[in-house]
Image (cartoon, rainbow, N blue to C red; front, side, top):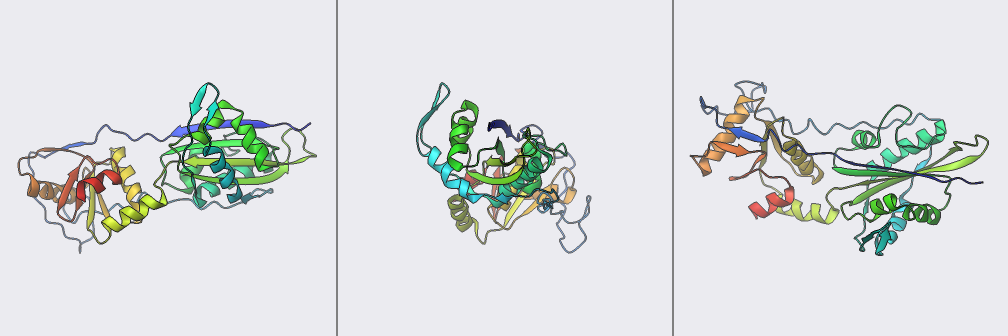
Length: 306
């Protein structure tokens, strides 16, 4: 008898809102940036850290049973989202379609290959990795993530129906928060029947900027000089850096609590607009000559600078 297992993981990578405020140092003296010198922590030109958060691990497939990324799952997910439905006792109205993302699909392929090779179904990988960690190793462009898994559902229709029959999985599929998916299917020995080859499926959901939003923002910020200043302890700063990168924009970024020259440049820009300001919420974004503080999203920066 075919058995069906469906499991759920829903994680939101929190953005720390503490330690995001900066005070003007009592002994503040402006240090002129000097980009031609090697960037040091103290006293030379501001050290651009915009590339430090972009490293991602390329998944090297090693399991014996390796499947494929599965973009054919996308229209089935979007068809389900296009209709309002009850997920348990909670009604979800129709929501817009999600977009395909290859990095999410890579994370899904890593897990289906692992499950098929090691004959298990779950969210903790054989190497101890979590669903969220597998996404972060493939891409750093998303905040909210979810993973749904099934075993031995060979058809798309059967997979979708099984998930929709489960209130928790139904809620994930119908959540407006999610904008992108990646999916994979791998075949391997059934978890409970090693002599039987069964499909293992994974769909990864995530929240990020849609392609239409990215294009609009790229048009607005194209050619502008964007500088990001913030505390290394402020998760909001790091998230904003990742958002800029997802949009494909050119920018520079600096941790002001680790770099005196960057701190000097930030306060100099702030005081050009308000000489009396002694405290700011980070990140501080300078777009050409416009200074915007406490920004939490690129959309917010767009509204402040258009």
